[in-house]
Length: 203
Image: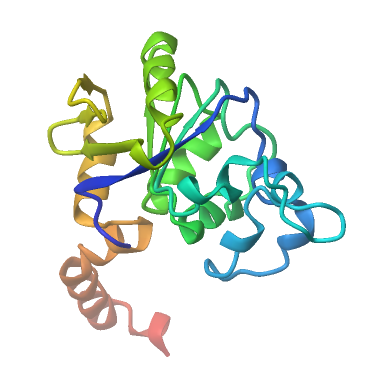
């Protein structure tokens, strides 16, 4: 998993509450187990007409936000089913951070496991960042995970909280597999010992 240390990019405003995982990636795109290729279907029903044409009024179709790396959203983001394809689609599109007043628990956990930083802030601070995000191409926001600090387009700073263990994993690019591989020497030592004491398990 790619390390998350600092991030600077355009923030896209999505002032919608209860954005569920089916809105993020509709069910018909869940046939794959690959983490790539889903970005083009992110917010599919909001981005495209039934005929497949882009809806020009949707934020991520607007020229200023096509390369957005940060999403400023409404309350209860990522609710609905537990599909891990939702953070896969966000990451594949290029969204590396979502800022909202609250998240659904499973989606929140899945973000950390896929290199996305979900930031929970009070509504008034989200409103400030939403105003910043509405500046279009000038909505450049910087996020420093080590300092736990967001810097807005005018230089204003907002601090945020993040669990220490999850912060460690993002800073070091560790998903569940990466964490396990960090103990590979102990695993190898245990298996070598077990082969000697319980060889029938390895027959």
